[in-house]
Length: 239
Image 1 (cartoon, rainbow, N blue to C red):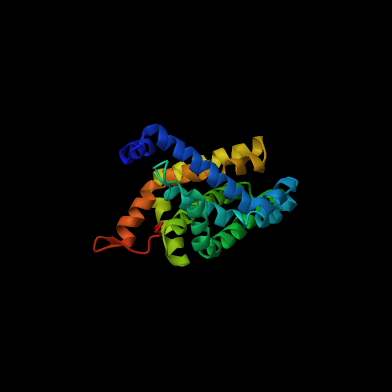
Image 2: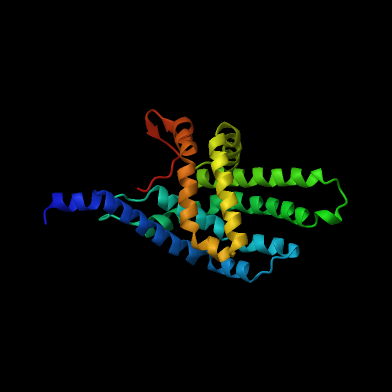
């Protein structure tokens, strides 16, 4: 078999589809492996308002794992003969774990406060419209978190700069925000209909959908905030 034949085999449409499926499967397995302790605790927890802080604690490992999945999928190889999703996942995990946790921990803490407040809303004795306001705040926080996760996974910025960019794109990229809101609705539906484990089994698929939906954000960050003199700076590559 000649080199030309091998190249055509690895770059054809069927081969690219196979490469995508293989990458998703490997990333999913690694995502589950890095979130097993928290996932096990989350599945065992009863759906009780008092368990909201414990659920947030169980979700701590999910931040770095999702970041590594986003990194691996962003840098995935299209050639079936040159696939290294596991190496890309672990590289993304090592590079991003500290930066992600700086944002993931306070984000989870804020959502925990909102979730606990909503779960015990009846005992607060405040007007009903406060519940609507809290839901809107929680939705905005979730969408901000999605933007922040994508940005900190693919680019090397300070945490405060990531926070500002994530907030900026909530308003400057409404289509991305709407798409991410749809993903959140689907994720919530899967969790309610099935279990948290079912959602975890689709972790790489949701990461891929988030990455695909966030392409305008990634493109604008690359063009406006990382490119100087024609060369990208502060972006995370797979070299």
